[in-house]
Image (cartoon, rainbow, N blue to C red; front, side, top):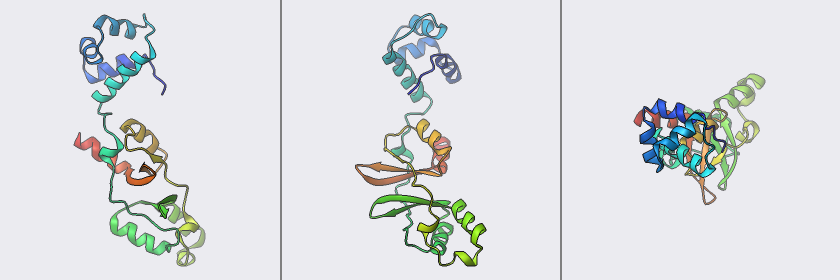
Length: 185
């Protein structure tokens, strides 16, 4: 991870805490925090990591995938008809489904991938198509301990993330889950 030392003061002020309070939480002196923030001191990486860890916890970044993931995951099979997958997505109010076979993360089917094939083939041309014919790249896999910050960044470019523990898919995190976590904080 890359740490911007200049970000310490900005984040501290945004949280509304004093240098003294941050120093107490990190376990260092207030003058040390002042020197770091002013650029008078080039601190050890371990201290910078600790400061960012404390700031992250204060900002709610102690939230992990395990805390916000949905464990009742709905999967699509690559052999399933697209029309059946559409029915499941509509019934459950889901905009994307991981495509899984024998526990393996093979791909993802989204509303967008379905719309693309409808635009190319028309409604009638899609009736006999299978999920494997239109699925996109697999959803990225993360650990249950992945931070909310990291999850949010990954969700900017992905419809969802699969949470994998010991080689097994144990949950899914969507943008909705992140927004829900923010509201419940």
